[in-house]
Image (cartoon, rainbow, N blue to C red; front, side):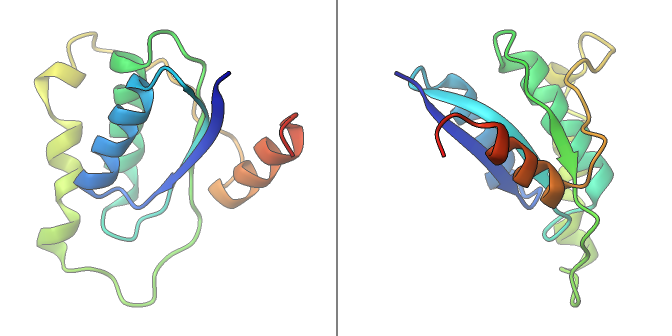
Length: 121
């Protein structure tokens, strides 16, 4: 039986690698992904998340939601740029398109909705 996991991440390289690793786990069903711009700039982290799901998700239907929250004291610019580097990796851009869905609601609302719909409450 697969365990459902919702990954809420901050767009750092470590969290993007965690997304990749979760997609490789046979006993995990990724229920959704939320991205908050804590260690990153939001847009490239969302794009990178969607591209990772497309490339390594084995056809899983996983939505990515962008946060509307913003940190009070942002990380330094040089640190936050790392999501751009991951988003630009050639391996993630071979197809030239992004198919993983972008949720219409904000990440915090997406998390609540995914949990409410889950049969594992």
